[in-house]
Image (cartoon, rainbow, N blue to C red; front, top):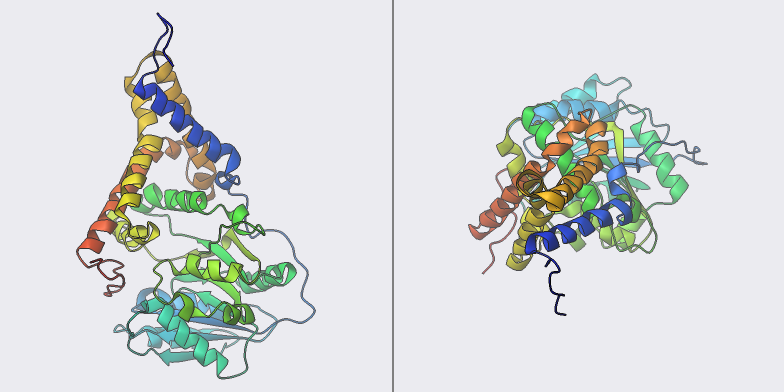
Length: 393
């Protein structure tokens, strides 16, 4: 179509801003309201007719600094039903098992803690999943529990957390009930980057869609997952996902094919793992970011370009363009800051931090590129001294 004489042509910048505005309007209005942070573990649920038996499985590798508080909080659960704790010590060298046993002994009333010495990691398995597999085998050797509570070694719970979790699971008939625990947000690095991590996760996996029957979105938060044992068996167990780096979401996809699942934010549980330096968060993200893109260079390039368009272009237009183009840049930048605000408030931070979301997005782009570079170097999926993602040919 030839424009009329004298009609202003749409510039490339204006077209890009229109596309950017369309993306943010979609995220605002049609992405399950993820940014509102409304899917949480509040609400009241009735007690089940009979309290189901639960075994907590805690995989731990060199977690001496945090395991005491984590096991102590598990031992302090006021759960009315049969509940026990099983620690899989994944070849730790720092006295993790001893710290855990000391914490269990100090609990009142004492909770039964069993410790399994983890075997050597076989080919094809990631470390965490093989530790969980050994825990499942041990749990199944005795009185088979109705629920398996998968919880990380750095998670601390309020005393009523398990009771509330079981009430929700029983009321909804969920195969998987998962809580996105509150991550530590104290250091400058944590305050700058952790809320955005939660924001991006909810954008990828809107929690309202996770719990919707018929939706293709499945996700979980690996720090806290209550799994119905029969559903886990029907889904093929951990062997079905044994090589997955993003194991929580892989497990959620398997379990959603078996029964309903649920994921929500919580303030009843929180992580005590510190990320004091930006490099600590970089390593955490780089471990699995390229796996999220299925190790595809094309997907990586598309992601980088999309992030630059969606997050960086609007503030550049707001600061350096003129007229309507500048106004559009300010409008889009304001929109993204407003959408980020509920996550910031959930973490006790000022909504004004939202204006820095473009800068934070650039940092995450750098982390993703680093994840790809580590994979190319043959160091993909590095965690606790293990390289868990094989280098591509």
